[in-house]
Structures are given as C-alpha cells and as structure tokens.
Length: 302
Image (cartoon, rainbow, N blue to C red; front, top):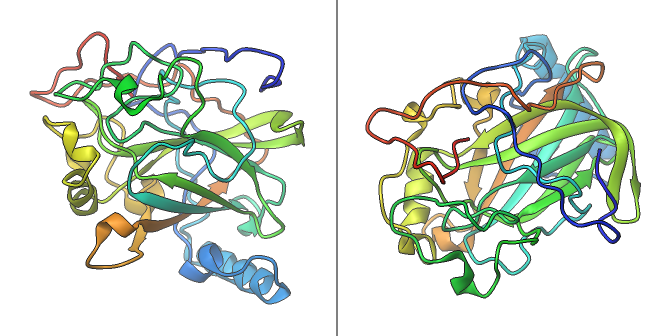
C-alpha cells in the first residue's frame, strides 16, 4: 500500500478519472462533540465515545453508508505516520479529530484503523506536484521557500486509538479552480505501522471533507490566503460535494477564538466504514466543472 519513505522516492499515482461519481463502500456520519474532542486516554471517554456511537446507530445516521468518491489526481504513496503534517506551511491552524467506527456493527470504534489525509496549501498547491496550477492569481509555490517537488507537506497518516480516534495538526486548505475548500482522506484497516509509514492492509473508504462557505471565505480574506485571488467555488457549485451535510463529509467546525478566525479552528467528524469493503477511489468519478469555471488543463480537477 505504502512504500518505505526512507528508502524510496515519492511515487506519483494519478487517478484515472475525476470528481463527481461514486462507488459503493465506506461511509461518513456525524457524531457528538465529546466523542471527538474529549481526552481519549481515559476509560470514561471510552464509555462516552461508545455510547455516542451507539446513539448515532439507533438514530440511523451511522448505518446509512455513504459512497466513496474519487481520490483525485494528487495522491502520493508513502505518506508518513505523524500528527503534525504542516512542514512549516503557513495558514490558519486546524486541529482535525476524526473518529472511525464500524457502521455495520452498531457504530463500534475501529481501533488500529489508519486515517490518511492530504490537501493543498493556502494558495492551492499540493506537495509533490510542481506543475499544478491553482488558477486565478496566486504567488509561485516556491515563494514560501518550499518547492512542491518531492515534498510531503500537508500529507500524513494517524493510527486510531482504542476509541477509534485520530488527531491531525494542520492548516485550513486554500482553494483551486474549480473546487471548493476540501481535504482528501482514506481509511485503511488490516495493516500496521512500520518505520514511520503504514504498511499492508486495504483502503476501506476514500472520501473528502468539506468546510462551511462562510467560514472558508472569512479565512480566505486573511494572509497568506488573500494572496490567491480569483473565483472561489462554493459548496453548492462543487462537483464532488452533494449537499448531504455531515453525511457527505461536511466538518463541524469550532473557532478557537470566535472573533479572531486567524487563531484557528477545531474540526470533527465520525467516519462510519465497512471494514469488509475495499475502495481506493482511483478511477471513480465523472462530472464536469461548475458553469462558468472551466478547469485549466494544468489545474487540479478533483
């Protein structure tokens, strides 16, 4: 699944198709705030997380499996197992806490599941892809002193604890034409952490996480995001987000300081997966850019 980061160069593996379509597998569902943000090392939290997940199951939200979506053209093999994935990239801080549960078994936690995320920087660039053009008017990616080629910024894995919880320290992504603000993710099971990477197993779910338009736009008015000017795609016009709220990957976000968005956000969501399913997201999709915002040939399309 992933290579040894120390002994191999980054492998570029582009998806065969882009955005919009779905392949049955995995799922997403909203869960209670405490199960995502409480101290997950205590027995009390274990009980709380399980009770919350069970409550979600009884309401039907967790058991309705959402389809996987395209992994997009900017996936890289060999991501590191780490909590902080910023590698010095500047932007509004984001603490992302995700809870993995088994949607086929009463929404019980899935300890040991590996959650992998990747996203663009504040100007719309992805690590490992120097030719990607975010469109609009954006500074050159190298202006921040970190060339994208063979870099791993804003990519990484975390392995779920006994409560199925993983936590990442990152930044709020920027945007690129024709997409809205989003984070890519995969959930893997059956593998193991080895020498800084996650080896073996299979991908049970491939999806994307999304941000409320009002919050995203308030962030994009700040430095360094504001250096990227042009037309930002809202959720309703995005080719991947289907309007389903949390069940479609819309994060619940809480500002660290309500009057100062630059201080950062906490985001959370529960990922309800089917551990027996397998879906990489590669090749799934179709779809077209929103009206009036065609994608340049060199720009990301999912």
